[in-house]
Length: 541
Image 1 (cartoon, rainbow, N blue to C red):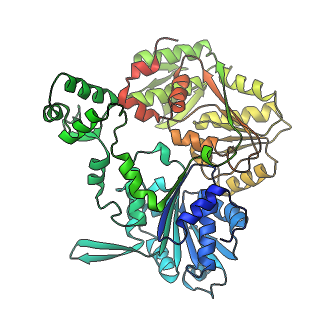
Image 2: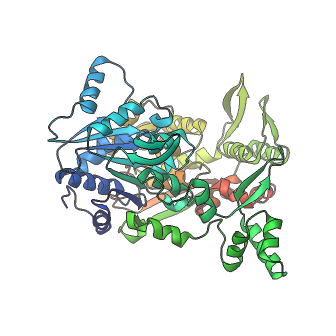
Image 3: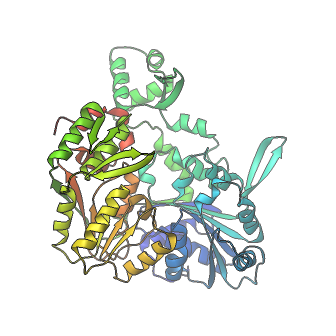
């Protein structure tokens, strides 16, 4: 094994297990260095004459990180990179054509980085397929949960349109990938349902489980039939823990599995499985069998099992709402309606209500004007912002501040500029131009940025921000993956200090409830499957 940077033991173990295999899965928790292992595998395949090119498919922005950060540090062979762009111009097109279609003498390993979003359509599939046909290629899908939905266009295009198909009439007999070697990489497998594995392994090898997706769900999941209250249509959904308890209660009463299955709307075998496994709470079964089936081609590791990283430290800064916030907050809870400064706000369902209440705790009243979403600041004193600014006065450290809503991000940036005139603050969110994003991250790593104000969904994936070991969460999204990804921008290989995370929480509000759900390692939408809105929101404030 040749390696430019010394691997940790778990990285060597992963390499030894997967090197030379036709395909493999790197299920390595965030911060454990899965990109390095993939690069080491590619470098050695090239050195052994088995490949001459690599295509990396990754989320937008992350694909550039491979070229800008990962390859210069870890690639142990001479290489040439190219990052896919839709940029127009004859010079660019000539360079792209030379890279894609006119192989040189393969003295250098080609790395072609493509953002996964481009696979939403078939517009460029031919280009990518020709690259694979012209080279002996390793095809890598980074953050492979992006292809977890078997019906999504991007999944279909990556799994089936980067391959040759053997057909008999319209029936597909075999799928033959154009890339002789394939890898999937993800650090968040532990947060996902086992159903997500089907598409990822379909990419690695057609019909890996010898089950179509629906048969796969039936074997490894427990679903029941339900009826939509509005349309009256029946559909299948995951069983709830409370429904499992009902099944066990029926069994204790003497009802047989067939009868209980008829009552609950599921199969007799599912009923028996629940009865035989009294500790079962999740809507999944036979997980040991599933784990065993993927084990020969998978490497699974958690951070605490392999890296001597500093610990994570959590604190909560509790805040009280001002009187106007309380009025609006309680009106929305009771009536799903409130008015502020001649603007009206109504909400239609529980998920949107929680989002609106979060905006109120952040100091904003969301409304629409001419069909455009806007947000008015509630009063002149924002308690959450005031608490943040006061706390920041106590440190000269480099700080990352996360927020969910655009209005919050912009207000934080403006307030930091005003309060800390001698410090540099940068805003990184969906509205930040791509070129500006790259410049911000370079400046941050050089130590030239004091405050990075960022959105979890935009900056929480793929960036290495070990320069900071202080993070503030002004607000949280509903997604556990968003939170974990954001935390691990700092808590990863290269971090030399404990990382401190501070959540700004408005006491007795959805802020506390959302944080509690995330601490319990749940997504909020999953939580709602077995809880009512009333139990989530609690009483008056």
